[in-house]
Length: 107
Image 1 (tube, rainbow, N blue to C red):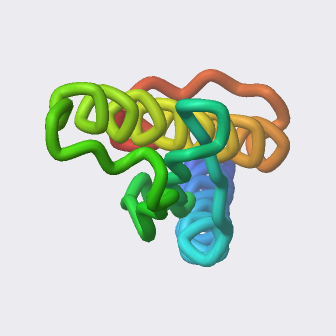
Image 2 (cartoon, rainbow, N blue to C red):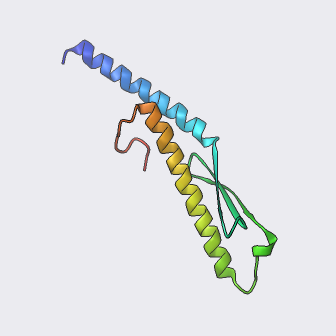
């Protein structure tokens, strides 16, 4: 590979890195929501994989069964995080043209 081709390859990699950084910034502002317990527990996460909100309907709060509420919150949180990862994967796949670049997304 000649020097010019190598330089072009480095430039393309830098451009892709910038596009990915921009996409990650945009995804931080996008939200996904998941529910559990028939909608009694709702958890919202963003594209950075952060939990943003947990909403509980008053009827689901039973002081005699805190384990059930914990299980429902955990289920909704895990589903919200799964949806967040799927959203990021889909957007990054569109950006990279379906290339599978190990370690690119940090997970």
